[in-house]
Figure (cartoon, rainbow, N blue to C red):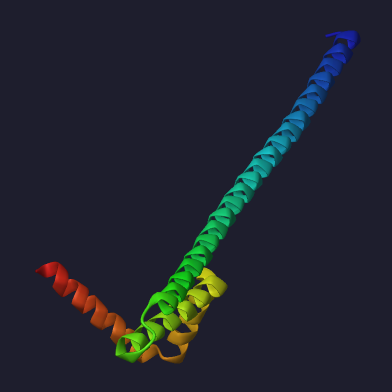
Length: 146
C-alpha cells in the first residue's frame, strides 16, 4: 500500500470513529430527552390524580356539611312544630335539640374532623372499641345467616 492510500484509510477510519462518537452522543442526548419527557408526563399524571382526589374529597366534605345542615334544620323543625308540654313535648324537644347539635357537629367537623374524633376515641378506649366491633360483627353475621 502506498503512503497516500494508508493516509486516506486512516483518515476514513478516523472520520468513521468521529461519526460513530457523534451518533452515540446524539443517541444519548435523545435518550435523555425522551426519559425527561416521560418523567414530566408521569409527574403531570400524578399531579392530575392528586387534583382529582382533592376534588372528590372536597365534594365529600361539602356533601357532609350539607347533610349536617339538613339534619340540624330537621331538628329545629321538630323542636318548633312538636308538642311543647308533657312527656311528648319533652321528648320532641330532646330529639330536636339532639338532632340540632348532631347536625351542627357534622356540618362543622365534616368527614375529616369526625374521622379524627373516632381515631382519638379508639386511641383512648381501644378495648371497649374492639369488644363493640366484635359484637356488631357477630350480630351482622347472625342476621345474614338467617
